Length: 477
Image 1 (cartoon, rainbow, N blue to C red):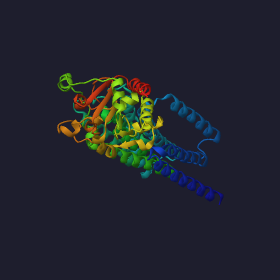
Image 2 (cartoon, rainbow, N blue to C red):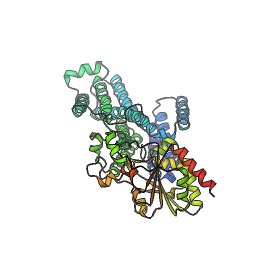
Image 3 (tube, helix red, strand yellow):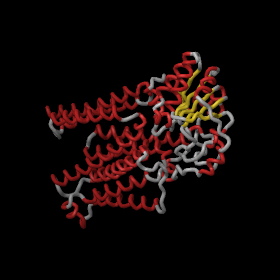
Image 4 (cartoon, helix red, strand yellow):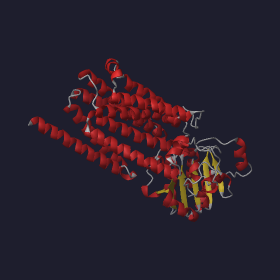
């Protein structure tokens, strides 16, 4: 009776964890409740991990508490040390760790079953382990490459080579064949399988690991938000597979939720770039324009401005829209930008932030930075909401954004970003673009917006430039 009651308690704990996961995911759909969503989900995972470890007596409570303390300290250290500009690559690393853990746990379960029972693996165990291993290994090494591209230690361009698709197909074939051998276990290999520590599984892992690298290397930096979302989905699917390996309901539910949410986000990101997932994975987006192509558009057509001149424009503006991009994140300019918005708002200026879904290096990157600087949520407007208002806007300030404001998306059918929904900032009376230089964005193409008659370039570091504008605005009061 006690055993049955205890098992019921475990199931109820898993159910509670699942409810907390779902509520946490729901809360994370809006910046205002995202922090609460993280906390709720963390509590759900704490319950699931604690119950699993204690019920199955995997480790002692002392070791569990010790692990929680060490993990908590590492997490706290990362939260303090990692800059907001480095959040995308940190998310990529976390995705990779999740996938890698799933693959290793599935392999460990196979080894444990072999040591304890011998004979053939149960069908459901072998299938789930093979799926978890392939997806987990691809996620681990693909995420490491994505993080390397985001961090600049690996070329952000699309690294292409002859026969790349054949190489990827061959690697996938090797992984799948190894998985089939693991499931079928023909008599010819039976003795070898049980004497050599499940070699087909580790062949599968090796092939899938190289495949993960080969899948992400050819993808340009402009597509990293989509890749991060997709790898997040992969990590969830790998966890769900491992849940079936372990027959753990909480892990299956959590992994399925992450996998589904990541895939939905991937589709949203692709829609925001007007590109299919196939094109993202195999299109090689990110070829860099030649100097001649840049000069053809920019030479003799660039008009520079200064913080003083921008301040004078703001003095007479009734509506101002600020468009943040990755350059704002790199310069850590969000606090200066938030202060400028607060000053303008206090003077009765209608201020809004135009947020493109793929601005930055991960979904929601700009929202997170602005929220960190205490920008009110109602000032942050999505693309579909802000675009119709640009024609009634006096001044648009673009800070470090490039591809997401490039009019070629609407004007040139041959452009790599043709059809991509962009912020139509050129419709405003005056556009101020704050960038360090005229270098292209991650798409690698020039931006004709910079050469338009109503556009003025404010060259310089985003934080310093915006702080200079703030100081000028204060001095003029």
